[in-house]
Structures are given as structure tokens and as C-alpha cells.
Picture 1 (tube, one colour):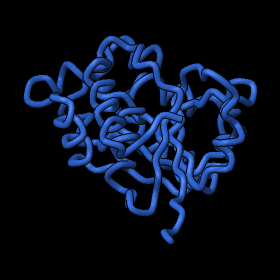
Picture 2 (tube, helix red, strand yellow):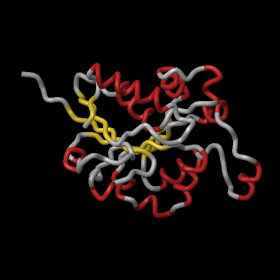
Picture 3 (cartoon, rainbow, N blue to C red):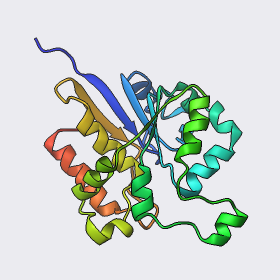
Length: 207
């Protein structure tokens, strides 16, 4: 008789069709993103890893929000993962305008401060490699000059990473909370197509 697989759930920040709190909180591993939406308890609260964008305004807002460290999902997280290696930001991302840098203290790269703040809150912090980012981009056709125009969503990077890092003979991967809509520079249709291909081949499943 085979050993029952452990369950990993990747929870996006879109609305959920029903209350999934029991399934999510009973999973062996839960990945969430940025500032998770707990949706009045529908998405539970268990957080094994919090994967975040460490560039631009989104990270600046988290670092300036002192209450962020008190959120349940942050306190529960065993690991903080920053998806952008400094080389990637320097090479492919646009710097904030000078006015925004001076007046709003915008930065391209918040990695150092994120490590200081989150590490100071007793969290282990990991920075994904440049190769991780480039391979994930290539998987959905973002290569060459396109790397300065299209940027994978944190959610896609998280799903891609889980399928690479976890042994699928031991883990069953589920996803929920994704609608593939939002910022115009994410390649939503390519990301959705890639995920649905993984669903069809049985390497992950919708919850």
C-alpha cells in the first residue's frame, strides 16, 4: 500500500468560490503571497511560506506599515521568500522617476531593508536566484527584449517554484485564489495557459 502524499496548497489573493479554510489549515504546507487576503476566514490562516515582491511601491508600503509584522499570516510564516534577485531588478526593471525617489522615497530594490526588517522579526529570509527568475520567465515565453516589458506575477513564480522544488512522488500540490487578472505587465494569458497545462497533466490540481 502506498504512503499517502502530503498536501501543499498555493493560495492566491483572488476571491474564493467557497469557504476553503478547513482544507487550507489542515494542509502540510501553505504558500501565500505579498499581503494575503484572508477573506473573512475563507482562506484559513496557516502560512508556511510568504513569498513577496521585493521591488518598488508594494514592498515599500509593507516596510512602512508597522502593523504588517503583526498580521496573523506574517507571524505564522516559517519562511519569507523574496522573488527578485538584485541582479534581475538592476538589469530588467525600470528605476522610479527622480521625483518619486526624492518626494516619495521610492526605490527599485528593497532587498536590504526587507532582510533587516523581516530578519529583525525573527524570520528566515531567502532571496531567489537570478537563474530561478530567468527560467520561470522562459517557461512562459518571456525572453530577450521581452524581459524588460513583461514580468511574471508572484503567484506564477510561486506555483512554478513549488513544482520544481517539491518531490511530486511525496507531495500533492493544489492551487486556489487565482483569476489571472490585474497589472497590465503580467502575462496573464500565458500564465493561465501554463497552469492549466499542469492541471491537465496532473502535476497540480485546483482546490
